[in-house]
Image (tube, rainbow, N blue to C red; front, side, top):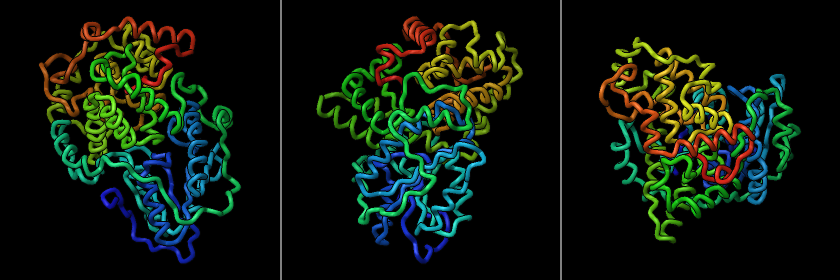
Length: 473
C-alpha cells in the first residue's frame, strides 16, 4: 500500500475528530479501492469510523445530462455497499451555481484526515495540487487507478515496448485481490441535511433538475454503476474474451469489453477486471494476454504519460521528431477543409468517418480502432494541427463517457505521433502515421458498422448486438 499513498501536506490531525473522510473524486466505488482501504486502515488505527463523501456539481466543465445521469446511476450501488460495511455515506448534488460550494471543507473540519484519489488529469489533478495547503488536516492521495502503482514507474516511458518489461516485472506483486474494506467502527453520525438520496430510476429526473447543459442526452448504450460494470464484464468474459484477440479491431463484431466508461468514472477497477479475465481464461483454457496488454500495459502507459507530463493536452507533449515534422507541414494546403461545426455535425464526404462521429454523439464512445481513423481524418481536414487537436479534445470533453482521462489524451496525441515512430513522409502528416478509408475497407466491415450507426441514428434505440455489453474498448 505504501507505494500508492502520498501525504500532500504537513498538517497535524485536529484534536477531536469524528471520522476519517474519504473523498471519492474519480474512483467512485467501494470494492477494490485502495484509497478507501487506506482510509479504513487509518480509521482503525485511530479508533474512528469512516465517512465516504461523493459530490456532483453543476459547475464542472461541460456538465451535461450524459455525464450527470451516468454518475447518478452509480450512487445507489455505492450507498448500498457502504451500508453493508458500516461506512457512512454523504452524497451532495449541487444543482445551481448559487448552492453551497464548500461541502468538502465543512466535512474536513470534523475529520482526522482526508483521503482522496491520486489521478493525473482533470479536476482531481487540480484539486490535489491546490487544496492540501488550504486544509488544516493531513491530506492523502492514493493511487487506485492502476494495477501497478504509478509511483513505481519513476520516469516517462517512450512507448509500450519500454514500459512493458517494467510492468511485467512488477505485476506479480500487484495483480492480487484487495480485501474488502473492514472498518472496526460503524459510522453512526447524522445524515447531513444536504445529502441527496438517489434511487434506481431517479437519475434522469435529478439531472433534469440541475443547471447544466441539457442538449447532450444520456448515452443510448451505457448505464452507470458498479453493478452494471460487473454485469458487462461477466458478459464480455462469457461471450467475447475467446474472440477478443481475433476480432477486437472489427467494430461490427462487438468483441471488446465496454469497460472504458466504467474505468474512467471509477465504477470498476482495472485490478478487478484483470483478475476476472485471468481467472476466466485459466478456467476455460483461453488466452487473455492480448486483452491484458490493452488493459494494463497500454492503459498504464497512458497514466505514466499523464503523470510525468505537465501538458498532456498539448502538442508540446509530443516527441521532438513529431513536433518537428508537424511544424514543417502545418502550412500544407488541405482539401477538403471542414470547419469544426461541420465536423461536429458529421457533414463530411466520408460515410465511415460520419458514422464514427455519430457513434460518439449517440453512445458517448467510438470503437478504439475507428477512433484512430476518426482522429487521423480530423488532422487531414482541419485548418491546422492545433485546430485538429482542439476539436478532438472538445468533442471528448463534451460527449465522451471515457473522455478527460489519461487514455483520452494519450489516444488523441497518438494520432499526432505520441508513442509511435516516424513513417514515410507525406503532405499534412509529415512523418506521422497515416490511415485511409481504403485501408479501413480492406481490414474491417465498414458497411456493417455504417448501417448499424445509421439505424441507431434513425431510431435512437440500440439493437442486438449493439445493445450487448461489449461496445467500447
